[in-house]
Length: 279
Length: 200
Image 1 (cartoon, chains in turn red, blue):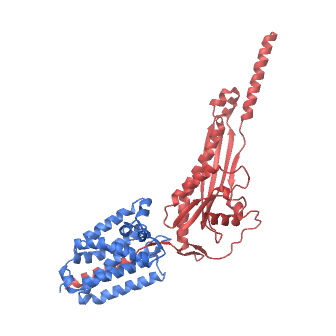
Image 2 (spheres, one colour):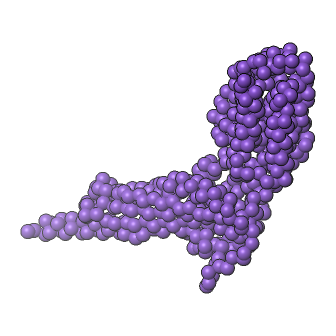
């Protein structure tokens, strides 16, 4: 082997090592989390279970509802605000037409202070003129694994064409509906999703971001029917629960309904004719 | 009684329109329900359309059944043309009186005011038959007890109204008032006989 050949082989080997090293540097093996908890927001640093004062919760339909994501406890773990708004608008669209719901205000997270507690919630409720606030907690974890094929990233070309990075995005959202005045939890409902996929090394960042967004979207889609079912159960419970009282506010919606009694009385009138016609 | 009850065609048309209105988009229903706008000269069509809208199928079912049953007596006595005229003239009166007697009422839906009006008018038709006066009085008394209970806030779940919608009993009281005026007219022997319902 002459010197020239030795140098050439050495250069190739070095280049391969360097390039493989670069590819290795890009590998993703970490987890990504996003979370915001209503409990941490409303009961910060609580050492004991919160004591709820017994009392009557008064609801004045049509109820004015605020809806917001619970603020993230740690900076940098929150969902982008634009995405939050889109998700909350989706929830709002499913409940806005209910006759006993007066209005639904989407409250931007910037108005909620981390660990602000009920004092902050009351301020926000006054500002947005709402009686009830639905706080959406969220917790998303993205696991990343490198598949066997990721070995081919060292070829550089492989980093562009081989889908060697696998991700698994697990999302949980939970809407807890609070009456602000009485600080009482009226009802809650969860929504979950799991998104799995894989991507090439160079597309990983974009693909995983889209997967996280899709995870929230799917979790909210799961939340909406659960929330509707819980709302119905709450309405049934209200009829027997003496701690919740429904009072008409000034300016109420009214329905003229004769009810079953009206039908029976009208039937009574017609029956009289039938009886009279008998010989 | 010398006449069988006839199918109330005008009232059936009202009921069909009311059933069709259930499937209207929420935005349209909001425009058609009775609001306080007509008192300010706005959206005057609501004086009629508010009586055709309901808060749900159960609400519509009870109101329209009552309307059709009571109207079968009245329409047999008055005829379809006069009953149609009645449906054109009375809804604005019912709407305006309801809004004036319930100052906090912001929106109203339901055919019950019309149904109560027809019920009282039917009572007027039957009043001409002396043998029916006692049961008619009993039925009217039962209705007034129900009305008093509704006004006192003792409404039951039988109203068919969704949670959060108050029972607008004032509309029933107004319906009873207008119905009583009609009943006075129909109870007169000559009027009832003219319409072919009552044998004099």
